[in-house]
Amino acid sequence: MPHNSSIKVFSGSATKYLSEKIANSYGVELGDVRIQRFADGEFQPSFEESLRGDHVFIIQSTFSPSDNLLELLFLIDAAKRASAYKIVAVIPYFGFARQDRKDRPRVSIAAKLISNLLVSSGVDRIITMDLHADQIQGFFDVPVDHMYASRVFIKYIKSLEIDKLVIASPDTGGTKRANSYSKFLDTPMVICHKTRKVANVVAEMTIIGDVKDKNVILVDDMIDTGGTIAKAADLIMKNGALSVRCMVTHALFTGPALERIENSALIEVVVTDSIPLKTTCAKVKVISIADIFADVIRKAYNNESISNSFLF
Image (cartoon, rainbow, N blue to C red):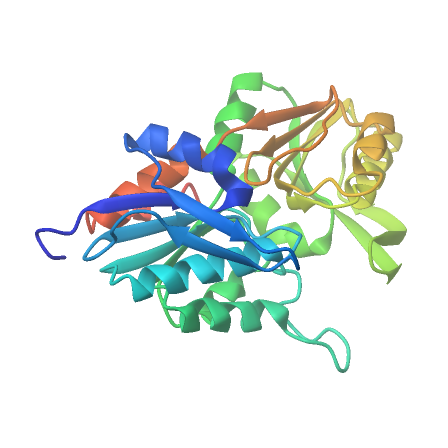
């Protein structure tokens, strides 16, 4: 790193609420970004200060609409053309991550395409959290720091001081995540096995494991329409559980999600602020991940190891 390389932190327009918390936790001011919008919907982001020789961190989650991803790509390209020394994309929520493989004929592997776009735009490093599939890290030809919200969730779970605790996965895809929690907390684990006929619609669900007279915590990476998590919670209670909560990193909360949560057996839904909540309900509690990202940004800038930033 050049001796004159200073750190500059910028935010895309979709994630400014979180970027301000991260910058405050780090102890820097957010840099000045302007976005010029044209009448036809086209837009052009620009940095309103010099980046020459600087270590630039650009924070933007890539949830819908796709303009958020495009804006991040444009900002990376602008930073590269402004002679930034290093460009790091901080992506608290990496969108399109569910498209990490060909699960049926003639579909795109969108997560791989987006990784190619980010690398081609000039990014030097990616910092993200709770990817839908761990193997997406391998899609990038630059370093990826993959953080886990378990750091904040475990602390919260311990503060509840719950007896007879069981960790549950709402589907078989989340088994590894749930297993990590259960090992760390030294608790049993159960799995909800679901089948789908179409996307976002759960056809059938069964429980593998014992939840009778237990306090259950479901863990997952995201809630979209809320169908899976609500169905899993109701099924767990029908099987004799004392209570059921869930800890989920990315709160997409589309369509009837909040209504389903409100009407479900869940007594609490704990999420992070990786995505801004447009609406919420009494059962939803938000825990900030700003300190985690500020810590990792500091270590990345100072070329320090981040291995102790992982909980598991």
